[in-house]
Image 1 (cartoon, rainbow, N blue to C red):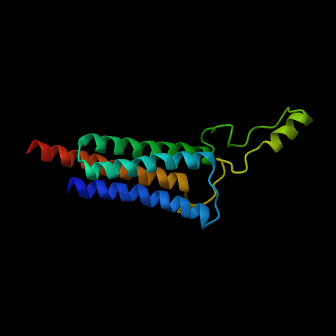
Image 2 (image 1 turned 180 degrees about the horizontal axis):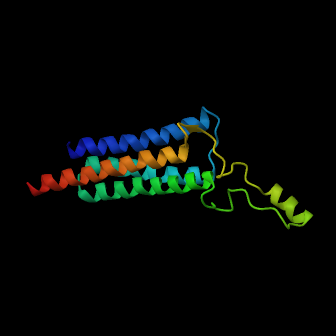
Image 3 (image 1 turned 45 degrees about the horizontal axis):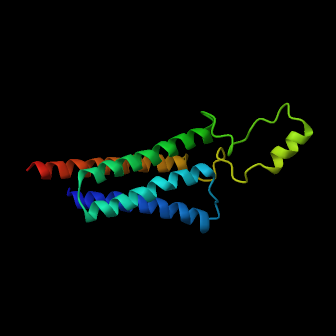
Length: 158
């Protein structure tokens, strides 16, 4: 497969995942938690990298695209683990233990609690939440970026 086709596919994949997240938010009524927002930034970076890679083909763009896709996959996997209770997430967006708090501390905790929690599964399909799907699909996108790197390397070596 050609470098340009692979880059276009990876770029379109990140754009599709980002558009999907925005549709879930604005059409589906599922507001994102902070960790959901974190997963969007590497997709935006991958889209910009893809545009640059199509305009100025160079292996560095494929490397940067793979890093961006791997970054959002890592954040998605971490977020999915938080949702499943495998590990604790950031205290700013997960349920914090409230035992041993005074009445004033408890009231302050309630009043300052974030509306959207990172440890709640807002939506799932086939047993996987949105962050888990993002992790899997983004790993695939990282693989496409790596294939683009290999394709350009082979072309440069010919």
